[in-house]
Image (cartoon, rainbow, N blue to C red; front, side, top):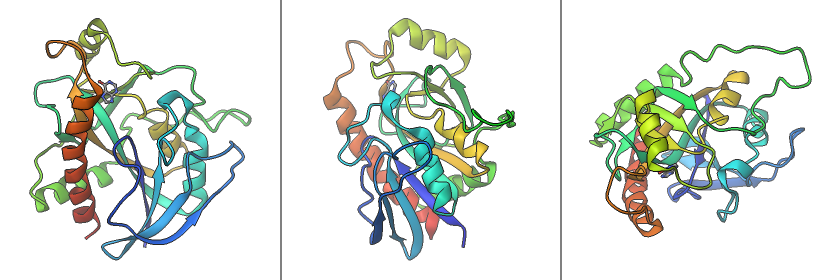
Length: 242
Ligand code: HPA
């Protein structure tokens, strides 16, 4: 059985349907992961869960030790990672509470420790297709099975945060081809690829991105939409493992 991990983002610091087996605190050559690794069963299938921002939520996107998180999962024998993360919606289909399974990434983040190939002979991994097609297809089929409407494609733009974007930044990202904007997709996806792990993302739209609606983006709006999107995500994950 291939070991599956789920990395939960804002709005998913715990997986309530997970039957707990054990919790492990790990240290890695890259420092401490965000939280304990929680091993459990989802619909009878073993799953390792990690809260990306810590549990309780304490790490901003630029403070997350992405290398320790991915290294820790590799150490535990994980072969497949599903990342769950809140995003802003840029293009017209990406309304709040909607779910997308992105197929491409543009990275606008900076100053993050973004590779395992720092100390040794450099390796240039292929990143043409940043997400595992196999995992994406399985997620898309699971959504159909669970009757959850999703977007099966999308380009995810990763910003540095923790602030949200300006309206002009979002216009530029849209011209670049981004459908979604988030703050944690990179370097996570690339690090998983460096360690030869399958990685796919569930993007849960929390809000229209900056300038896409009148007025400012409020945390209350984000939380309300995330609540609904994360409930669908939990159903999607259950369908994925069954
Ligand atoms: N921008 C960046 N990251 C986000 C957003 C956003 O509007 N919403 C949720 N995560």
